[in-house]
Structures are given as structure tokens and as C-alpha cells.
Amino acid sequence: MPAGGPTGGHVLREAIRGRRRGVVAASLLGMGHQTCEALVPVIVGVVIDEAVAKGSSGTLLRLLALLAVVFAALSTCYRVGARITEAAGERATHRLRLDLAARVLDPRGGADADRLPGALTSIATNDARRVGAAVTALSYGASALAALAVSAVALLRISVPLGLLVLLGIPPLLWLGHRISGPLERRSETEQERAAHASGVAADLVMGLRVLKGMGAEPAAVARYRRTSQDSLAAALRAARSRAGHEGAVLALTGVFIAVIALVGAYLAMRGSISVGELVAAVGLAQFLLGPFQLLTFVNAEFAQGRASARRIAEVLAAPAAVEPGGAALPGAVAGRIRLRGVTLGALRGVDLDLGPGLTGVVTGDPAAARDLLRCLARESDPVGGVVELDGVPLTGLDPDDVRRAVLVAPRDADLFETSLLDNVRGGADADTAAVEAALAASAADDVARLLPDGADTVLAERGRSLSGGQRQRVALARALAAGRPVLVLHDPTTAVDTVTESRIAARLRETRGDRTTVLVTTSPALLAVTDRVVVLDGGTVTADGRHAELVAADAAYRAAVLA
Image (cartoon, rainbow, N blue to C red; front, side):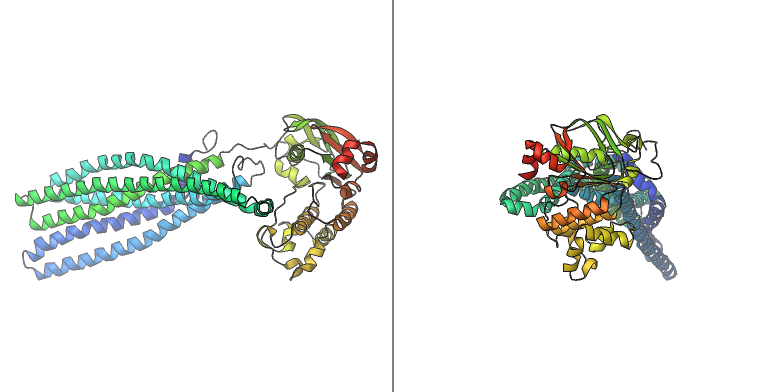
């Protein structure tokens, strides 16, 4: 891999190299097909000269049998070659999607920086498909070049001037076709960027649809998407015009070239330099050459678009990691003691904090401070100053995956998946039945299951939209509890839950997580009342530390934040 990560050219070469066998096999079969196609007018010319002109029935039958064999061969080569070619392109597309998924899911993060989820989806679908199409086009290009070579040799045997005309005329045509594809490549890249942005905006608006309706902001959202969609449409139309212009220009050039071949052949026949059969073969070859030239036009356009898409894929694959793994290892049994020493990141300013077994509440009026604290504890970002330790080991010295096996940070807006409620709680892990049932009870999600038609086996709608906001929160909380991590950080886990259920959840959290490190980043009085201590963050630093009741009695700012 090149220094600094893969480039667009590297991505395209690797896609071709990964399907090398299929591409080579398809190219050979395509060459066989095109060779047989080129031989057809040559054999027809021989039939005219050797059978028709001489009146030989035996020669006519033999040549017709040869023609039948050629047709059978070209048909077989085409069918098998097309199947292998398309398979190679689909497998290359699949491989790219796997690589993109691996990069996006990499524990080090960074691939989604400054990108909307819909944009990543567009890159993994449309751009990967276009690179796969370029792999498919490669074998078509090889077969077209083989057709040109066979036609040139055949024309050389008929007439040296005709053969030289083809051999000397093809390279300039190919060079002009490549030069003409430049605008198409640039506009194709812009088209894909605008389409990806439109997909991202659409996904973003759909995710926040309920909020938008509640605020009455639908007109503004529609206007935003309309502008984005119109930009995408304009880019697509420019790319379409560019492709049409590219194809039209190349076809005009090839049409002129083929006409010149036909005129030179007719002139040579009039002078008696070639026979009538050779003239028919020459004209037939000239007409046949239109197919390979059109194929090369298609290949050139596919490669132009494939290169543009490959660059976009390379940008994701080469995105710098948000955090890097260290060489240290956690002890076999994680006690779950977290220490923050002088931690500075975003809204955090030199935070000193010790977190041990038991329930600790963290109260802050600044959402940015809460977000940055969660990023540090989840090791989604490393502090720019200070250190975060787990059982005395700096998180920067650990692999991000190891950190997350010990520390689970459950965000406020946790997504649910289109599977059963039970599978959502398991979260893809092999959690035992007792742990899952305990988590369902502790989060009051067992009440949710009882209301569903198939209980916990009921399949939820996309993102859990078949549940209310409070029900989704309870299922997400059950999933976090079922994971059984030594350290659990919960961010506002009950904001959409009614007060009676919230009090019940608070008491059960105490019973379930009282002996393990649990951090509740919240302003909920019900949750804070069951904690062992509460830490207040103000201005990015720790300003108070005590029990909930003590802080309520002694701190007016705390009362305003929690009881307002």
C-alpha cells in the first residue's frame, strides 16, 4: 500500500488484481469471440472469390461449414466470457464493499469524520459499483483490441496500404478518446459527490423526522433537501451531457476513420489491386470495426467514471484513524477503576476525576462537556492533554477494541435494529439467558416485551420505530446492561421514560450495577438519588463532588440544574 494510504489508482489496480484470473479468462474468451467475428467477413470474401466466382459447389460447402464452426465458436466464447466478466465485476464490487465496511467499523474510527451516514452508503454502493464496472470493462477492452489487431492483419493480407492505414490510425484514435474523457471523469466525480451528499441529507432528515414535525420545521427541511437534490440533479445532467459528448465525438472520429478505410478499399478494387471478394471482405471489416471502436468508447467512459469513484473510495480507506492502538494489555480481571488526570479535550479543561465500583453521577449543563467526556471514556478520541487510565493503564496504551470490551459507553440516542427485541438486547453477543432476563427486568424492558404480539421475539421496525421513545430507551438500556462490562457509562438513559418507570429503573440499576463501576451522565433526580456520589462539571472542570442530597441542600447551581 502506498505511503499515506491507498490512492484512487491503487484502489482500481487492486480491484483488477484481485479478480485477475476472472479478468484474464474473460479477456481470452472475448478475444476469441472478437477474432471469430473478424473472420466472418474474411471468409465471406473467400467464398465469393473461391466458390461463387469459380462455381465450385464443394468449395462452397466446405467454406459454409467453416463459417458455421466460426459462428458456433464465437457464440460459445461470448456466452461464457460474458458470464465470467460480469462475475468478476460483481466480485470486485463485493470486495470493495467489504473493505469499506471494515474501514468504517475499524475500532480506531476516523472513516466517518465529516461524512454523513448516507454519504458513506452512497460510496459503498454507487462508487463501488462503478469501480466494479471498470473491472468488467477491462476484458471488453482487451477483446476490442484483439478485434482491431485481427482486422489489421486481415487487411494487411488483402492489401498492405489498408493494413497500414488501420495500424497507424488506431493509436491516434485511442489517444484522442482518452483526452476527450477528461471532462467526463471530472464531472462524474462531482456527480457522485453531490449524489452522496443528497443521500446523506435525506438520511439525516428521515432520522429526525419526528423532531422536525414536532417543531413544525417540515418546510425548511423540504427546502433544504430540494436545494441539495437540485444540485445533485444538475451535476448528474452535466455528467450525462459530458458522456453524450464524449461518445458522440469518439463515434464521429471512428465513423470518419471507417469511411476512409472503405473508400481506400473501393479505390484499390477499381484499380484492380484487390479482387471483388477482397473488396467485400475489406468493406465488411470496416463495418465490423465500428463495434470494437464503440466498445473502446464504452470502456474509456467506464474507466473515466471508475477512476473518479476509486478516488472517493480511497479517501475513505485512507482516512486517518481517530485513535491508534498501543502495545499495553489489560489485566486478566478488570477491576474497572477509571482515573482522569488533567484531561483536556474540546469543552473539558484539566478534569481530575476518580471513578471506582459503585454508581457515580456526572452533572453538567454543557452538552459539549458531556459529549467530550463520553468520547474520552469510549476512546473515540484521545485527550489533547492529560491522561485517562483504566486500572492504572493509560487508555492510549491499549487497543481501542480492548478498551471497549472493558468499558461500554451507551449514548443517549442508541439505535435499535430491524430484528427481534431479544436479539437487540443480546446485541450480537452470546449473552446467557439469565443475564438477558436480568437486564430486561432492570431496565423495565420486560414490560415492553409483554405488550408486543410475540413478546421478546417480536421483530422491531427499522431503528425500532414501532416502539415509543421511552420503550426504545428501555430496550437500549437493557442491551447495555446485558453486555455486563466492568465499566458502564450511561448518558441520559431515561429522558423519554415516565417518572414512575424511571424510579423503578433507578432502584434496579442500584441492585444490578452497585458493585461495578457505573457512570450516569444525567440530570435526572431519580437516577442521581441512587448514586454513591455526584460529580459536577462546570466550565469544563470539576466544581463539586458529593452525595446528591448534600449537593441539593448546599449548592444552588446544582439545584437549578437538577430540580428545574
